[in-house]
Image (tube, rainbow, N blue to C red; front, side, top):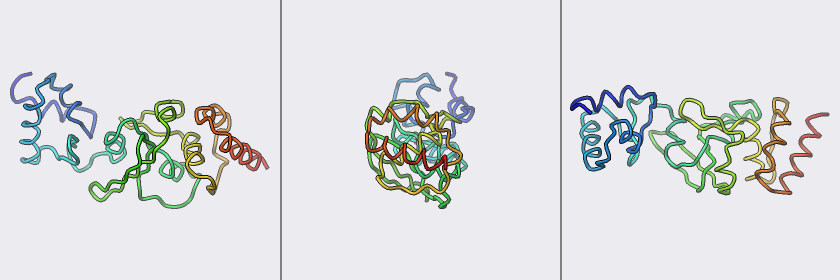
Length: 192
């Protein structure tokens, strides 16, 4: 890479959130010490912003959903974040909730990111998870099932917009009899 093009190459990237590994790929450089040194310089000069160890953003207008899925991988936006956006629940949500391999809650730039642990076989199965603008997001059907998997008794305000064929297609990845029973009850109630 030609000297002086390092920052330009980062700024040209479509991603708003970049990890050190992303930057190493962009720069085609495996020297982590040099990469960290350059990034430290750019952060000090406010050309880039460090939001977390090893994670940088181009400017303060970065995608919070993109950041959410970059902090811990694998993870995807789900639960009430998706359900509220899709109108299945009516409560206003301020936290960004994600399915992940661990339980954790972080506050970064005033935004709370809440990670809920699901079994590895569920997290790594991509059925019902879409990749939109560098962000993995659960479909309404997948978020609906994630909630039922983690909560025994959950109230939904509106189930009319669910595609029940998709729900039944995704349901087997959870391998949970209790949950299957609840899904069938909710399916019958939604058809009344």
